[in-house]
Amino acid sequence: MAIARDFAEKPVDALVIGGGIAGCTLAYELARRGLRTTVLEQSMIAAESSGRNTGTLLSGPQKEVVELLDASVEIYAELAEGPVPFEFAPVAHLLISEDDASFEAAAAIADRYRAAGVPMEKVTGKELARDYPRIGFNVAGGYSVGRAWTLEPMGATHAFAHAAREAGATIRTGLRVAQIFSRGGKVQGVLTDQGIVPADLVFIANGLWMSDLLRRTVGDGPLPGLPFTAGRGWLIQLGRLDFDLPWIVEELTWPDQEELGRRMRLEGLADVAAQRDDQPAVEAICLNPMRGGDARLGASVQPAYRDLVRNTDMASRIASRTLRMLPGLGSPQVKNVYPGNRPMLSDGLPVAGATAVEGLFVHGGMGSIGMHAAPATARWLVDAVLSGDGNPPRQWLRPDRFPGWETV
Ligand SMILES: Cc1cc2nc3c(=O)[nH]c(=O)nc-3n(C[C@H](O)[C@H](O)[C@H](O)COP(=O)(O)OP(=O)(O)OC[C@H]3O[C@@H](n4cnc5c(N)ncnc54)[C@H](O)[C@@H]3O)c2cc1C
Image 1 (spheres, rainbow, N blue to C red):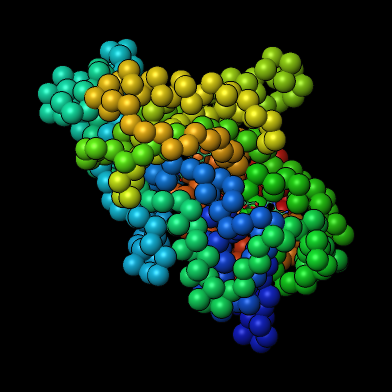
Image 2: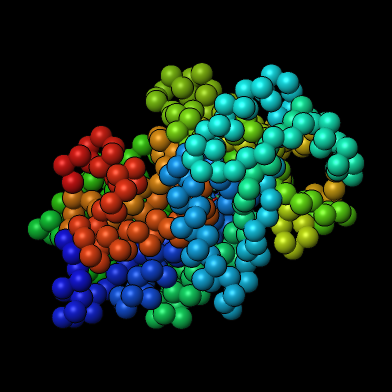
C-alpha cells in the first residue's frame, strides 16, 4: 500500500508505539514529511535500552552493519548541531586481543572487516605498550579501525523526540498501548489505558515488548511472532578519566551480528533447566570515552528472559578483564553498575516492514546495534511506506525473512 496518494487528499494520522530510539527516529521521519504523528510511550523517553547502552557506533565485519553505520551517521549529523546536544563525535576505534592465540585468530576477522570496506591496521601489543605507557596495555596485539562514533544515548534519543516535536509530532509519555485494532484487514487504531486512539498508520516500535503487541493485534490477528530473546548486558558507568583515551577500546572477540543472534536463541524448557539463561554468551571489554569526560564500560551479552535478573557477577568479570588488559587505567571511580536488555532477533539484525494488516508496520529487533541502526532503518521504512508497499528494498531487513511472515 503506497499512501502517497491518500496523503495528498487528506491528512494521515500515524501512531508510533514506543519512545526508544526505534520509535523516536520514526516519529522524526514521519513528522518531518507532514504526517500527523503521535508517539505513545508507556513510561518515559529512553526509559529502557535506549537510555541504558554504551553509546558506540562501530564498524563490523558485515556489510549490512557498515551500510547502517554510514547511513545513520549522516542522520545524526543532521541533528547534532540542533537544540538537544548528545555528545556526538567521531573517535578512533581500537580492537584488542588478549593472548597470542586470539590475536592470530583475529587476522581472519580483520580480513572480514576489510572485505566489508573497513580499513584496519595491525599493531602489536609491544607497540601499544610502548606508545601508550599511561594505559599500560597488557595484550598480544590489536587492530586500529579507521572510524567510529560516540554519543550519549539518552540525549540522542531525546534529540530525535525533540526534532519530531518541532516538526509537529505529539509525544505522550506514561501511556501504555494494551492492544492494536484492525477490521477488514486494515488497522483502525490502538487501545490505551486512557481509551481508544484511532489511526491510519500504526508502527510497533516498542523494543522487547513487540511480541506482546503482535499477539494482541485483534480483529485480524494475532500476527505471527518474531524470534526475540533479551540480550542482557551489564554496564559500568565510570567517572572522569584523568587522561585522554584516544579510542573506543573493544575486544576483537565480540562476534558479528549473525553469530550473536545464534548464541542468543533460547529454544525451550530444556534451556531453562540447563540454566542457559544464566550463562554469558559474550564477555568482552568495550570502553567508550564519552565526550563529557567520563567513560562507559561494558559489555556482555547473555540470552535472557525479559524480567528475570541473572548473571549478576558480570560487572565483576568485565572489571577484572579490563584491569588485566589495561592495568594503567588504575581504579577509576565507578558511578553506577546496571543491566540492560537488548531486543535481539535470531539473526542479530533489525526488522522493518509491513505486516499482514494494512497500515500496520514493525520497526525493531535492534539488538546490540540500535543506536547505530535505528536512524537509518526508520528513514528507509518511512520511504517504503510513503512510496512503496511498506517493505524497504533491503531483504535482510524485512519481516518476511522469518517463518510465518512469508505470505505477508
Ligand atoms: C548493555 C547494552 C549496551 C548496548 N550498547 C550499544 C551500543 O554501544 N551501540 C548501539 O548501537 N546499541 C547498543 N545497545 C543496543 C541498544 O540499546 C538497543 O538496540 C536500542 O536501544 C533498542 O531501542 P528500541 O527503541 O528498539 O527499544 P527500547 O529502547 O527498549 O524502547 C522501547 C520502548 O517501548 C516502550 N513500550 C514497551 N511496550 C509498550 C507499550 N505497550 N505501550 C507503550 N510503550 C511501550 C518501552 O517503555 C520503551 O521505552 C546496547 C544495549 C545494551 C543493553
